[in-house]
Length: 289
Ligand code: AMP
Image (cartoon, rainbow, N blue to C red; front, side, top):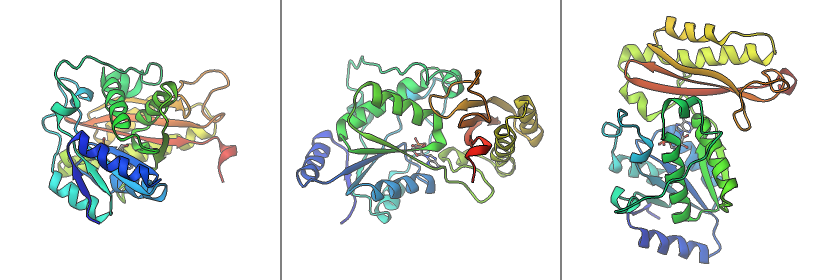
């Protein structure tokens, strides 16, 4: 069956209802398009856990700051559709902005705590926009399962909190980060990198991996040195590079330190105007194989 391309809410509900009446388990994979292998890996994960996969493509204006790349964000619906069809995704839902944000729209969704700091500290309002659009998509599709990438680790935690707090009856599944062979995490924004920047970019994963290894021993580790290594590698600015607990993204505290509990090392760094994010697990030594 060809992938159905649906733009309107009534058509979406009709299709989803017909699947539900047949007792099928439905998975949603929200994206902003410009699809790459990372996105496609989530489609495959969704297919393993459901009968029907619905991908959504919506470049959500409310999660972009005023000086961010909303206008420049890559958009190519035909190419994305062809990729989804090859993956045998059942439905591509691509709503119009005016349909998502009707005239007079006045509602916000804010997840405090886990949204604060890291990306949330540097992109005010970003996770409010994410929480809002994810809530709307979940309410429109009413999937049994929704799949998100660990590439956006803080976003995944925000969504888990949101779903728990609002009793949204959906299972949230996280998919591992898919990388280029040199370690660079796939991202739609990698298209902004010129060849020189592209050669520097894998240093982000390399440095994160090195320092995650050091942190896992519990030995004192200076993360400022990791930032300096990124600058020495050619990054123009390190926005943040921090260890957090993997559950709830809490900062270190007595009894909650690297090497003691499962954590995550997360960073955002800039290559001229391109902002890259990445994160890696920090497993206490005892938890490793
Ligand atoms: P985006 O289109 O950037 O909003 O991403 C849509 C979904 O794909 C999000 O859940 C992301 O975390 C996920 N994603 C983006 N890049 C990757 C990657 N390299 N590997 C796995 N998932 C990814």
